[in-house]
Amino acid sequence: MTRPLRIALIGTQFMGRAHSNAWRQVHAFFDSERIPELALVCGRDLAKTEAFARQWGWREAVADWREVVAREDIDAVDLSLPQHLQAEVAIAAAAHGKQIFCEKPMALNPDEAHAMSHAATQAGVVNAVNYNYRRAPAVALARQIIDEGRIGTIRHWRGAYLQDWLRDPGTPSGWKLQKQFAGSGPHGDLNSHSVDLARYLVGDIVEVSCHRRTFIGERPSVDDPAKRVPVDIDDASQLLVSFANGAMGSFEATRFATGNRNANQFEIYGSRGALRWHLEDLNRLEFYSDDDPPHLRGFRQILVTEPCHPYVGRWWPPGHVIGYEHTFVHSIADFLAAVAGQSAYRPDFEDGARVLEILDAARKADESSASVKLKPSGQG
Ligand SMILES: NC(=O)c1ccc[n+]([C@@H]2O[C@H](COP(=O)([O-])OP(=O)(O)OC[C@H]3O[C@@H](n4cnc5c(N)ncnc54)[C@H](O)[C@@H]3O)[C@@H](O)[C@H]2O)c1
Image (cartoon, rainbow, N blue to C red; front, side, top):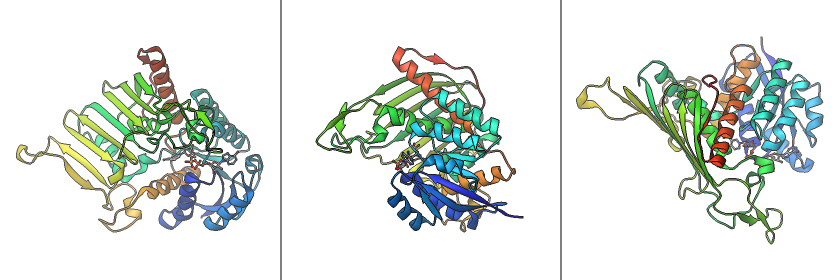
């Protein structure tokens, strides 16, 4: 028996579009007891939000998120908002019993994140953080290969998330460059993706040291290009970490890596094998195995498009590659399964809060020029 799930989306730009596409597609490709109904979309400018609603098939548009979370004809909210708003909206939504799908990093800091987790747990609602790269089939296959013991004991994680869109000092300062709205720069925005992947693939992080830099201290205001505004977030961040299981790790996140547009990548080295992945070639997983005869050893490239690969059987025949937007469809398919009570959603708000704890410890490590230890938590 299927039942509708009435969705309200809050935020209508980059993620608003990616999520709208996923909500529209998911039911055609993934079976679920709950069928999303694109009921309501919320943005600050009503006329623009109405145009967005027409384009993406949302039934109604409103301009006030408080109205959204209080509406009785809404079952789930999708928060595609700047970081400074996510906690307030999520806590209000939980109080009204809404299921919550929330963009990453879920809040400005760990305290806000724990408050969100507490509110969602008290309300008994599904709480999901959209670290969507876990749901690239090649990344989910990497986890399967690790769980099967094929790379042995993990010794090294090397994560990097490299972009270059801030190289030009003339690039204006929007909300993503202001601490009060974003919390941090790539330290939180990009490293949070990598830390989530590392928790998912390697395990929990228990010690961290860190260096962050701001290369360009002021930029033109996005509202008035003649005005200069200070940049009070990092432009780049590097972490060295210890995992609870004894592995070591490094992370690099920057918006100044010339020529790298969205280069999210990792390498994992184990005692018997290794894995490498790069978002810009997301259907491919590189795998090295000591089980291969010595004369054939080397990194093989697995084209992760076989029906036996995670998520892939729902899409196209082998070799018919998928893309960035599919990771969002997978996140939302798993969210619908969680709402239907078929499986638990990970990463949940506790996982999202742990990512922020690790990044906050890294901030403190940078400020004190000393490594910071964390109390162990669990695998992501
Ligand atoms: N999962 C990913 O890979 C990924 C990628 C990009 C961004 N994000 C995250 O998604 C979130 C949104 O980022 P984005 O890139 O879409 O930003 P954006 O600037 O493109 O969109 C932000 C949206 O929030 C809306 N908004 C702001 N204040 C509002 C208010 N008071 N009421 C209603 N709407 C309001 C804006 O109008 C806009 O539509 C952030 O948390 C970001 O970190 C995640």
